[in-house]
Length: 514
Image (cartoon, rainbow, N blue to C red; front, side, top):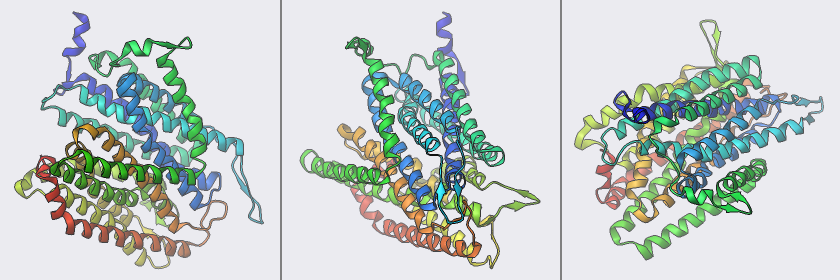
């Protein structure tokens, strides 16, 4: 009887397993966003990377982080099950984040401009990034899938369960961008990165200790296959070993931006070709048009996220160099402004959910919401354009960056909640998994494009510092004006063609609004 007790326990009307997954994901996101918030400063200030090289490295890393979950999800579905995949991913993340705590020696710049770097420390850093890429690949998609498994088909608690789970994501992000950034910039990079590693360790411990509350969910569907041996070694351990060794590939890729770029272009081209082939040869008119509608929406999401993801590159450097970060005698760290995105999501998500329901039959379809999202992300950069233009010869007031994050978060809430639902409802049943992979591939591509866009505002630095405030301001103004007009232009274009996309959906847009 005692074994069944955990199954009977609930947490605010939800399975206790949700609480375990909530804290596991919270600590995983704490580690991920804490490290990412420090990354551009660590590269440009400590290792004296140029803005452009720092941006491209972050773009390559982020692109791989969003692409690899397709592989991790496949291995979990076919062999490992969600629970074992999550544990393996968490172990890789702990190793990667703790590895980041090793700084080595700071780079130095001679009077002639030559830079000397600790190449051993840099290779250790790149390999740590590759472990994190593998770890996220195994954990990120699978933990969300495990949340879904806690609820039976038709369970009305499922949507609210996911809402609570996503609050964990944003709580982790909020805490990370406050705590890890403060530790990293105040006491040293190893403290900030080390805090990320400690957070991930707590997440791993939480998940392992909470196994009994998962009600047996997330286990492998083919345990006998995992127990089979090849050359005397269990298949399960071979999967782990090969997955660990894949980090060696990512170790090299993250240092070679052109390889990541070509890989994304080839994968994108092949995906488009397959979508066209499948829609022509396998689908009737209705299903074909729904797939076309989904593909159009995915293309527009690439543009949205390419603008939105300036947060960790150009906006972070802008906050560091151009923003007046002092209020009432206290100076905030530049990276701490990233916390506003998570804070606004926590505050506004319930408001948006209520607002869409309140609109009733006037609730806009997915294409219109995506268009509004693009307008808002563009207006966010418009806030910075205005702030720079009225700043005179001094620094820019922080209110304009806060307003940027407010508008960007509103845009995210118009687009993100609808996106994954659109994939599942507009995709033909037989290729839902493939289209989910295309969605992640699009997100990966947007991360890489974001780094290329950020290079428009690449500033010449000396020992990691921008020497001329007003010259730097004008450089960022060029980028933000470009992103402002891009967001508005593409947003209005999507609104213009939204009736056509709505027609292609054949009524699915009503389901997406429910």
